[in-house]
Length: 469
Image 1 (tube, rainbow, N blue to C red):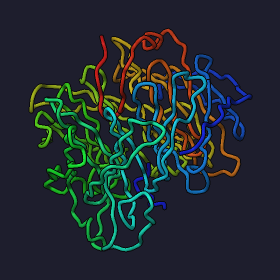
Image 2: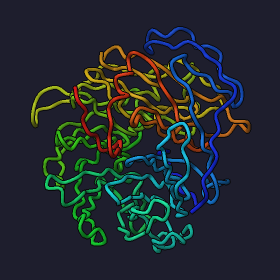
Image 3: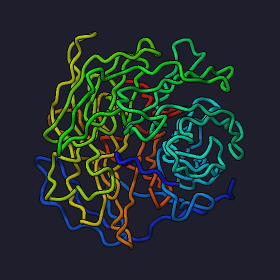
Image 4: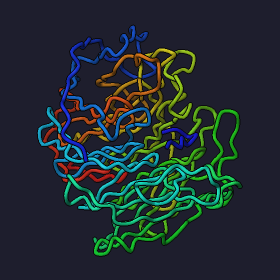
């Protein structure tokens, strides 16, 4: 979530609810050509384009509910969706997407608790100083005695996941990216973290690096840090009043079959060669000091010829989807990949931002999304916090356009919330809401209907796979 690095401190099945009030409004086209935004929804009211609807909502439940609860990222395996939370994680059975149920929960506090899965292994990122590496740990204010990093669980029994291993990493693990090796014997975790401080014994400046954890699949309890490659030997972006200085990476998306990765690293966007999984190399690096405040995440198109970078202006807690902020800040940047081999370049083409203004109480900015697997097209579904879920087409890199949207109105208390991650998986869109739990959405549109036949057995969005076409 936020670039200010918020450090916040097995239940029965939950019921499924669908909002009763739905208003339908028209969909905009591109940011540049958008008509004046229509009036926004009322408090907690749901609005959507005619081609998108909510099928279900499962609220957060104890022990992962309450004041400290914050829904985070999603991963998928078989008929299960796994949702991270600042308090732990929840395993949902999504065999029937319109009626998901909680299959298991783990209380294990430690922001952000982003998740990924591989077979029966689940990996959990901890980026808040804890008293130790257990799930019973407490928040630590010490700059010398604390733990943060990666936790590994065995989830063969979805109702009773087992914590089996921890791996400490420098500056913790804000996010991580799972990268399988080519032999099928190991997986690597590219651990992103940032914001070092001279007051933290395990997070010293300059921290222009990532940590790489190797996990032998036959012996996951032997997982360890095997490399800490420096991506920014020159220190990266120095920063300004409009752009963050680079002190590490926020997120990395890998495309293993193409030996590529894209890093969103605070003040820099990078393209990486990952043919040698333990030794990623920077091929190209770009900056946007005019419009990008914080390079947050990345998404390749299916062909591996484009990258979408997101700008998390305001750290995810600010109202930036308004007329004052405009269409080019807090937006997506669309880049084509040109050239070949080590001469490949990231070439900027355009920005995309949702064509609807939000109120000044609604935190809204470009956030996590995934491809909608339509053959021959580049289509993405994406979260915008309280700006909701947007589905948009970037087949024309210079002329992106929105296809569909769904959003809730402002929260009753005027607080922060909205959708953190919105991902397409096996015919439906799953949205992790910061405060509302899990939403399941359906899109029915000629532009996206072809995706309904594409099936995956596992999905970690930061580990992109390809689909036919």
